[in-house]
Length: 288
Image: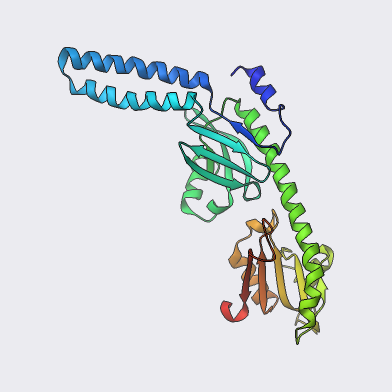
């Protein structure tokens, strides 16, 4: 793909719509030609000398030739961009990443290869993620530049990422509003009525000064106060957003149960059916 064609590809669809990217055909045509040449050399060695090296050449480069044909036919590696996720399809094996669980798309040059690196949430606390960051600067990388200049692919991934983050925040705010409407009925049936704190500034004031303000909702224990003068909290609710999603769950548990003295922590993923299927209930008795 020529540079003007690759640049035009960036703007041929609105950001957030489904977009399928394939590796450069020109690159794989070159690979196929080189592989075919070594296959012919292997056949020559087999027919003239009966050499086992010839067999190795035919088998190995035959495999490379088959991969090149599959890539040229669009049946190999694909990068599929969606509004909320992106997929890497590799010969029938697909892996999916959420935009709000990745970040920092950058050009990563390793030896003679140029890749697009990025950080994945699930790699943050792993040894492999740390090793990958030391070696390449990121915890993960795309396997190809998919016919685009590296800087253009970074720009495209970043644009989709920003769109996905905005959509994630929108789902977060919608879930906060929905839960704010249903919680009063739940509190009315409780023997410990409390006040619902929803505004970010009010939540920040209700937390200890050294605590990161990650909760989405707080429910006080009536008008009771903590030793530090802040309101006593009976329930902490975390409706995952692009920021709090990256915070380790153990940190949230310590904050809720140790710092705030809460009896319950609810973690809600607003990706789908948040009030029915994606709720994690943690109680102080389980934490202790």
